[in-house]
Length: 308
Length: 242
Image (tube, rainbow over the protein chains, first blue to last red):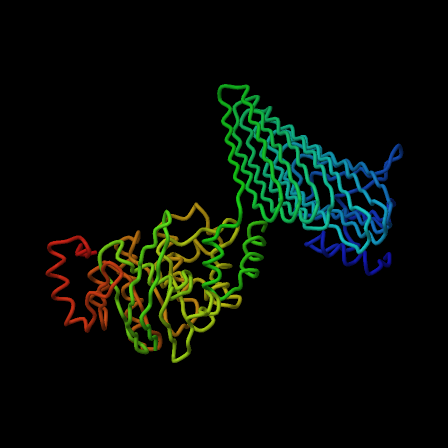
């Protein structure tokens, strides 16, 4: 078993709620190299030959298994780009826990660009959790730019649960999904920015198969002088339905833009978008204060639960 | 015991100052139930908010067990022992029912404790415990949950602002029984703001507020006959037998 330093262990605790362990199927990428990795009976992880990254093969016998592939960057100035491709066979049922944490104690920018693609077979069920987190006393920026491409075959189900907890100075998130017949997509995106951070999330969901459905929920909190831009786009190319909901809490001098786009290219495509941006509701604050909390405590609880 | 002395509350609208609560004085004894009633817009809810510190008094004094809490803010009054159920409780996106109840109790509640609280207000616990306190709950469900947040821990004084509003017949009967139970224990003082005859009939004392002033206050048997007589002629009391 590979010995991990304290910073790495701390970051792993932040980005992997289910608990990273060096057993089963796992791959820990640390400062641009695979520090440790393991396969399981049904999940095989292979290093790419032509570029940085891994191919993950999840066979159809996989039932309820977890795959952990976190990334930790704690070398200031590290510019890491990695390509991870997942091949999930028909009928598999798997939870994939990714996530990236950057500890930057220097003055140079640390960056991780994770480009992930998921090829999800017929009837497979995938839950993908991705948490992003930044820390460190250095002045160097912590930058995370994930790209997620998801291809769903007939009857496949994909749950994408992403969260940017705190400390990430800049992020541009690109998500593209192509959906087959009767496939289902559930997206929960949670984002917190503070100070002078910026975040942009662009998502395009193409519902190509008849009976496909998508539910996209985005919740964000923008504090300080941070800026956020959301651009979710749902395209109905067949009989399908989708619900996109973007809610943001804005605080201090922050700025939030929500630019939804819904595009129906089929008579039976039903697509709904809801967006709301607003400050913390005074009535919520007052209610929690009547339970004995200070205004600051109440504010923290409202934000925590909103992003929960 | 709550003592309110010469309490005033004013608002300024379009540059014009208006008195909402005008030099009101009253008391609520330990374990006593005081029902405050009167016409809409008379200042009842404003008075309740001033007692909780949600609105700041412009004059007067509020004493709880002899402690002057007039200058206390909302959370200090809550920690001093006042519970408050809103007429229109707010919704919390992302917060589950059991989480809200735990916050109200001041500690993490076990599932069975949440279930018991919800049952007391007529909500079938298993259906609600993990639901979000958001727009998926009806007005009546929100109202009952609001009352459960006040029941979640003991208080010296509980204030319920129109607890009957938006609640169905069966749940209302259950709430009446719940208020009776609390009242029978005589451990908590209760202020209920209500237009509902069944609630008014539970009171030890009734205080009628109109135009920001106390029109009458006294024992139930002393005030109720006049109120019922007046209720035949005006809309300040709901005599519907719910």
